[in-house]
Length: 375
Image 1 (tube, one colour):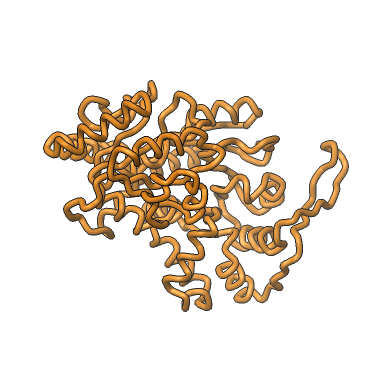
Image 2 (cartoon, helix red, strand yellow):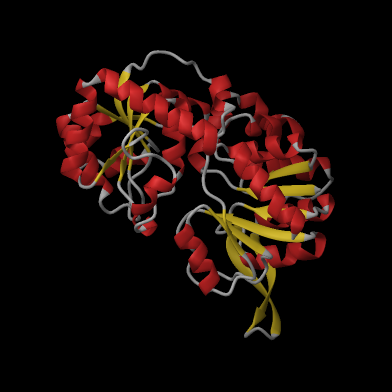
């Protein structure tokens, strides 16, 4: 199959990506995409790798990366336009109408041209917010099967109609898509890309406790949780630079904040940590399934995570991970495992074995390929 993967990147990651290799910005499109796929940021590189390994022809589009999209447009002799995007919508579901948006025009025009040029058998959109349903509807004429992958809160008034299949790693989000009338919904759990272990240093941990992530409106309890932990334990926080300003009102959190880390560097920080902390976003409800569950265990660190009834679907809660039921319980569990090195190492090793046995990205992509090939 010909499979085209469309995603977007955090602007902070893009800035760091090109700061590390500034010459890449002027390189050919293929070179930029190849470097991006190897970065271990997000899952698009893993999808591309394992699907190609299975014999599929795969293209990757980073829809909001101006350097890459400008290079593609230049190589195709296509004009690069910065004006706001315009696209066809149906007013009231009946009347054709050209609508505009503040999104730069190149973000829509170029990705649509890329779909038209690639003519995929399967078009997979991994950026349901930034690459809106109205644009996906325009892409359908150039693609066979149109699928989406989403792991965050469902956008308000989201239009499911352009998608033949919607995938989510979260059963609650999958149920939400069904309620919106999606043609077909599949749960595809998050996973760990085991190739990471070939690209990071496997060495003795030097950081006692780490949290890698963000704070903000969709994590209303996260700052309170972090504050309690930072006041009691040697916690290091790695996340977007804005986290430092968001933590300004809490000296303990501000002191614990280190810097941002992306892709391979993020996994190295996790590996260098004795204990990795996890807390789900509020929209997760009572369902455990986010990337950190499998990233922390995958690199071999001890996962301390908030208890959810289905956590046992992924791990043995007595021997492979450490669940907590409250902020106070989390503080106590972290303190215990900091003091009991042998127990900590045993649980971490068991958690890693479980992830590498049952929760690898390669296994998930085999499941994805089986579903789309049969559709």
